[in-house]
Image (tube, rainbow, N blue to C red; front, side, top):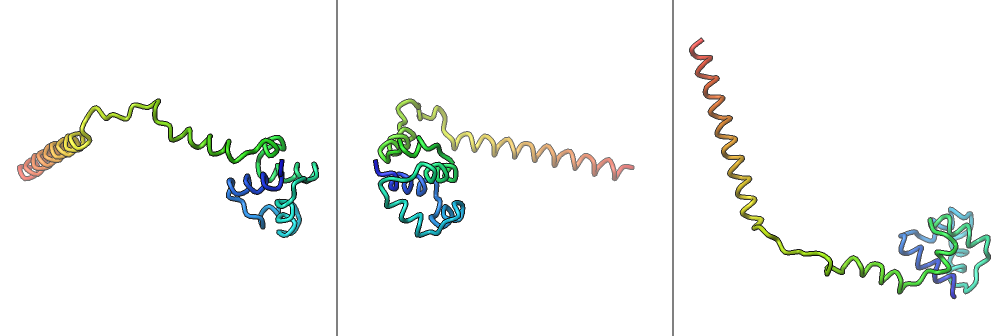
Length: 121
């Protein structure tokens, strides 16, 4: 169980730079680099890092890149979804265009009627 690698993996997944983590912990970037190269990390330091990373200490200890890959691969599993479209999207688009055209023609006719009424007044 190489805690330093786990911390680095989580930090990178969260898109957090070593500089930011160092600033939040009040240490140098080199200290963070050393921690990430260490197999063991003090419990108090681990607790502080966990808080900055937004994860529990147990989450860090149980972190595996394989679990992350498996988690994200579940989003690509489309077997539960039926992706067959039951209509032609272009047909729907043309229906909407035709409806807009008819609406515009009715509006134009209404405006012409108003103009004729104003001319008669």
